[in-house]
Image 1 (cartoon, rainbow, N blue to C red):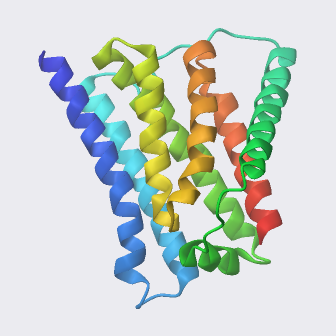
Image 2: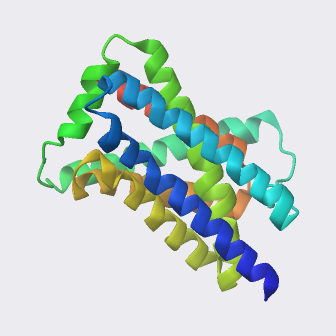
Amino acid sequence: MKENKKIILGIILVLLIVAVSPLITEIFEKQLSFTQVLILSRLWQWTGLLLLFFYCRKILKEKIIIWKSEQQGILFYLLSVIAILATLFGMMVLIHLLHLPKENSPKLLQMLNAVKNNIPLIFLITLTAGVVEELFFRAFLQTRITTLTKSKLLGIFISTLIFALAHYAYGTWINMIGPFVIGLVFAVYYSKYRNIGVLIFIHFIWDFYALYTAA
């Protein structure tokens, strides 16, 4: 019971870290340029990851990553990347065919304008998303929620829902559908194969491509 309370506090810590990130934009957008705000919010996310690292080490007495993956050959990793990217692409096409309303998001437009012709900033944003978000939502939240609920399905669903809600900061509920789909695919893969490295890599290249082409 005592260990469960520690896990719950860890989950609350992650939720607070995630919630503070968009608040940084609201607090500093009048004092700083939007580019500087983007950099500051990413630095906060890396700081939050460091806080989580120390919480796991000092309080939970374990690493952030508690699910161990089996060593696989290069072919397995290559096929994993291809299969996940193909799945994501297919699901995004399906979403497009649903003809959902396209709402303009001022925050998203601001970001696209800020990263235009700015490869280093795109790299910082997408690397942060790949590493920090996967360690937050999959490596920590999904595994601990699974432990608390004793249900892989709840671990997948709840962590994916939180992942989608975290993207509401981009402006509209429409901007949450893509992240929910991506988060669901990633969570299912992580539950089955427990390889966070593959997900970090795919998350990074998916976001980099999406941001680069959109800008």
